[in-house]
Image (cartoon, rainbow, N blue to C red):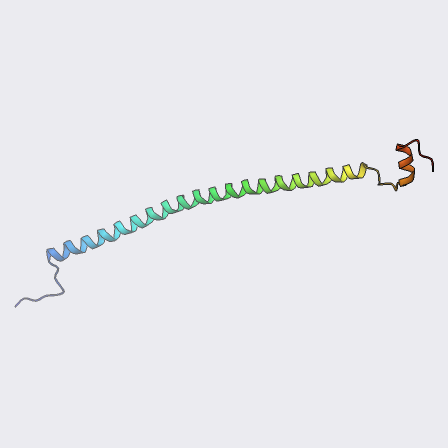
Length: 102
């Protein structure tokens, strides 16, 4: 009778166990590489989004400056104009038609 002190592993079992461990190592390495690549892609996309946002903000700011510039220019032009005066139709008519006396 043979006395077994524990489970014995055959060569086939050993090879299968080693293959499972190697597969696990490859999976971990692949996952780490995937996370690195994903981080690089996400960083590039975030940079593009930030650049696009900055361009749009510059356009908005330029539009705001142009709007305020136009507003202040109109205000200055209107401020320099004289207030409308009341005119007398008879007086103005006589001025343009000198032969008529009232």
